[in-house]
Length: 130
Image (cartoon, rainbow, N blue to C red; front, side, top):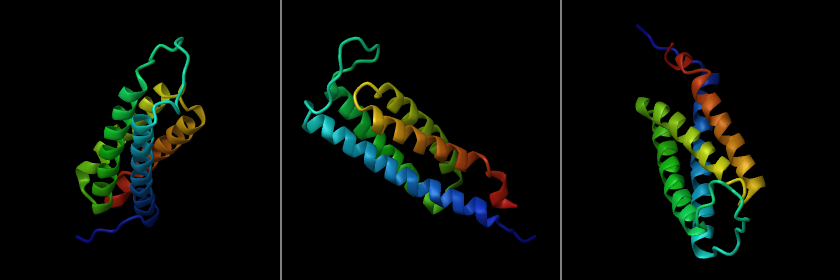
C-alpha cells in the first residue's frame, strides 16, 4: 500500500509549524519585555484579569517557549504534535485575549495568527495520510 500526501495540506502544516515558531518567539520576547521593563505596559485597575506585569511576563515567556517547542516538533512530523499544537495555539490565543488591556494591537495580531494555526492544523488533518 502506498501513501500519498496532499501537498496543500502538508504545506499548510509546515506553514502552521513555522508560524508557531514565530508566535512562540514573539510571545517569549513579549514576556521578556514585561519582565525587564515592566513600565512599558500600563493598564488601569478596572480590568478583571489585571495581574501584575511581572506575572504576565512569566506567563508569556513560558508559554512562548512551549509554543515554539511544539512548532519545532510539528516540523519534525510528530503525530502527537498536531494535537498539542492545536491546544497550545488555543491557549496562546486565550492568554493574548486576556492580555488585550496591556497591548491591544499586538494581542489581536497574535490571536489572528493562532486562529490561522488552528485552522491549518484541523481543516486538512486527514488529507495528510491519504
